[in-house]
Length: 235
Image (cartoon, rainbow, N blue to C red; front, top):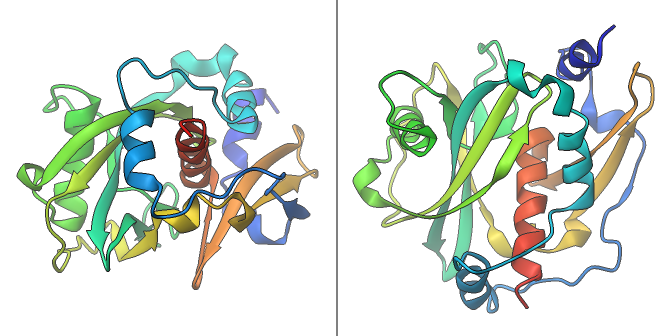
């Protein structure tokens, strides 16, 4: 099996990310409380800001250097809303009928289309299609590094504030559920676990986060962990 084939095989229906060996991923890193987040987010996305990516995420991407040319470009939105006096992240549970990432927790978004001006435009278009949030109600303020998924996508992610919270209009063909997670929960490194999947041709590790009855892992957890690193380094 080639490296590319092995990377993609990890997302097969037969792979269960929850039952792999795991350990706490707190690693003595600082917890970022909700009261700190507004100022730190502003610092972390200032034009002159310099930061270091999470080492596991950086390593995961570096493994794909030789096959990056074959990845499909996609854009996703990391939607933030202010609700119950705290910053929250909007996440979706993908439909079990989809070909890729079915049933997984993800950000709204999708592959680049010829209609799109750029990948940010693709993320905004897909967000409106999937959960019914119009682009006029989204203020994009930052971008995270590209993440190369195990299913062959080069994922560009953009952060955006939603101007209001209302009932989401879900496209049931793509999305099964929309839910919110407090950003402060995701900026507590003790809520992450580091999983290791040893029984593959190319053993690998990945982050996982449990929220209520949802298990967040793969690209979504990696991007969220990288976001935590970016924010905590702004202290």
